[in-house]
Length: 259
Image (cartoon, one colour):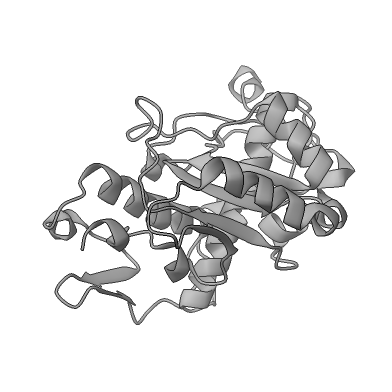
């Protein structure tokens, strides 16, 4: 019993809704994947759901696990962010991608599907958001997050996710390269409740996920303009916040810095 206590607070899984009467909570739910360096532990994620996020779906060729997709993309951000030079690519390995430095091209390996990687990565953003939110507030079981649950846990829907493209590297906090954390604050939550979006700032990169679609539709232009004014740094003139539908659009190898 004591073994389980540290991984549950309400005793109800924030993803599937099962309680400690019918589900176990024995596995530590890392908010960010361990293979990415995440050490922060959440709670109220049952073992079945915890296993789900870390396991590639059976019978679906080319579809990685949600946590692995996060690890690959943010792992590249971390790798190229701290080792940005003409030889960086030599030290980079990936399960999904091959980086051809001379041609400056990225190819996905034949056994993976770029659309599937993109969707799994987006689902991962929602996974880490709700788990961190619940750790911060203990309110992750609130029905208002059913939209998040349906997408992250069950793959229902395809919400809007935006990315801030800059031509400078925004430095993460001290120690975050080796042990990244997902930031959460009352201000970010207040903005989410007002505009319908949550700003994920991780390893020097800004993502904006649609949490409450009705609010997000109403305030989309206002919110994104507000974020652009505070986040984008005018360097070359092509800085922008845009919706991405392909992980290749977010330049996770950061080739724009290594011409």
